[in-house]
Amino acid sequence: MSGAKTVGVIEAAYAVDRATPEWLDGVVKAVAPVLDAGHGVWAGLYDASRRDAFRIGSFAGVGVPAERLELLKAGAETLPYAVIERTFVTRTCGTLSQLLGASFLDTNPLVEAFQQTWGIADSIGINAQDPTMFGCVLGVPLSKRQPVSAAFGARWSRLAAHVASGFRLRRQLDATLQRGLDGAEAVLEPDGALAHAEGPATDGAARLALRGAAVALDKARARAVKTPDADAAIEAWRPLVEARWTLYDHFERDGRRYYVARRNDPALAEDALTPRERQVVGFAALGHSNKLIAYELGLGASTVATHLSSAAKKLGLTSRLALIKQLRASRALDVESS
Image (cartoon, helix red, strand yellow):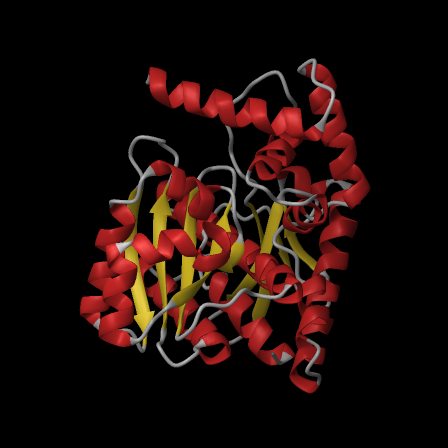
């Protein structure tokens, strides 16, 4: 996978000036040239915030017949929650045979229909998710059952983090009716020069962090055109800066380019934890590693570990696993009592 194609996927994730269906279509079109294994690529938006009411929203596909998209959407909406949890809630990347096992595929009538009709035996699932429980799943149908490699999973888990971040930003912009530069906390030149700042972005440390992120991002994009090193481009462009801001392109009518820094951290219900602890624990409950959480929030891995430890102590727990189990259990109780 080339650096340029990697950057193309991330750029599509942050094309937030588009309406949501067009945004989703752009993401699929950016992913298809990289992953299409002969049966197309599809994507669907979902809401898994209610355990008893999993909902599928917009669907889009490249090289996928409309009738197959309809079957995928209808099939996803009838899945038992145990399957939803193992694919949409607590996993980021893998094939259906990896995540659900051969026995599930052998006994599922929809899987059988896909194999007999289109020769599709398995599918890669890339789950762009965050603790809000809204997300975007990318599907890559395969002709045979096979696992994905650890390197593939690590790379696409990071790219999925950008898709999740872009989708979260799309929802935020729709909710506030903000467009263009309205509501942006900072606007930067590609060289990192600050053209505008307000609120927390006026703080000296924040200005330095934003400047550094803009410069690193611009250098990564320039290198990506010349090098096949996709992972270097991914590492340089993180979904959030200082666990608060997403940076993305904005073009003025004269073609002048800026980076917009807009607040885009996941908004979660208040509890005994600090906002940052809450977010870190929320990502951990999705099965994300400390390293991936650090990437998603734009923090150091040691900072993530510190937040997890602090959260566990506040809740009277002694391990990361106990913390995750309690969060998942409380989420289930909240849904059952609502």
